[in-house]
Image 1 (tube, rainbow, N blue to C red):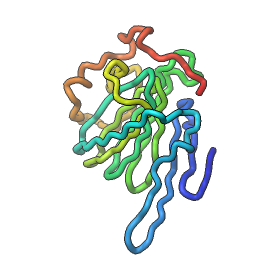
Image 2 (tube, rainbow, N blue to C red):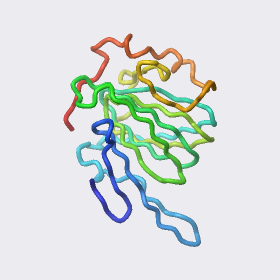
Image 3 (cartoon, one colour):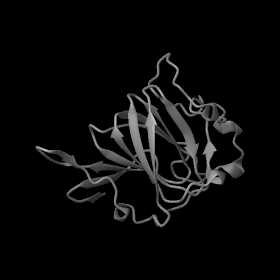
Length: 190
């Protein structure tokens, strides 16, 4: 665990390599200032090809599940609340096939580091603005999908009988049992 005046970084007890950065803001009469990311917080990654993206989602939208063989993501919720779903797809990982659901909001600021090979997605519990930093430039050849509602995963999105709004592309994502082994990542001890 790494602690300084503005961040406490904790590894997930469920999925090896997933890290939550509990951020502390500086508040005064003008508002709040939050440092959201430093590459020094995650020295095991190079952060040489950094790209930042921003996603705006309406309440009820579910994005994912997506995974990459070469890309690490770092998420920060600017506005709203999400329920993030994570699945360790890395063959040979000590936490292979483990899942985790975590709520992230701007009311409880945190960053979420999602390493290569961990499938990730989120359900927007309210209107949401999510920024995410990646350690590689976008590469369509490194973008894979996994069915968000695969019963084998047992991810509790908290939907009850409701149906989320899912993109046509994400509706086509296969269940885990239909993904060939060569398209699943291998464990990297980073």
